[in-house]
Image (cartoon, rainbow, N blue to C red; front, side, top):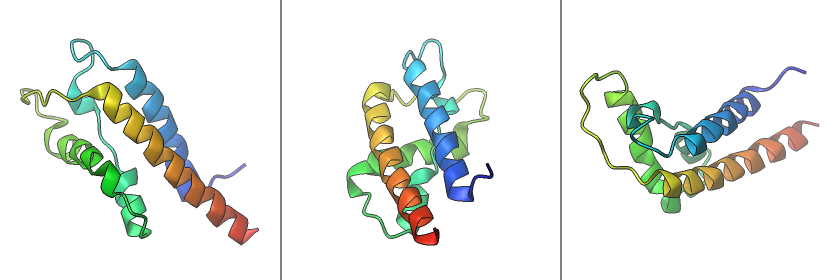
Length: 104
């Protein structure tokens, strides 16, 4: 089965969330490994993401500091962010499903 671009991005986000859930220990997983684009995609579709604005720091951080060998830790609350990411994925999934039903 060939996935549409939104379906592919959603699948990647789900896998990334599994990794993020397993990486809540900052002593083991550096913060720079975190980054998120789905928030921007929802905004482009006109979906209100005001309650998920804290996630925007992940995208900014990933772009600016992911490859910085000496980045200052941000002290992220990884478990709280993972919960917000789950909500974000649910919203994107609803859009993808709704979009694929409209095409059918």
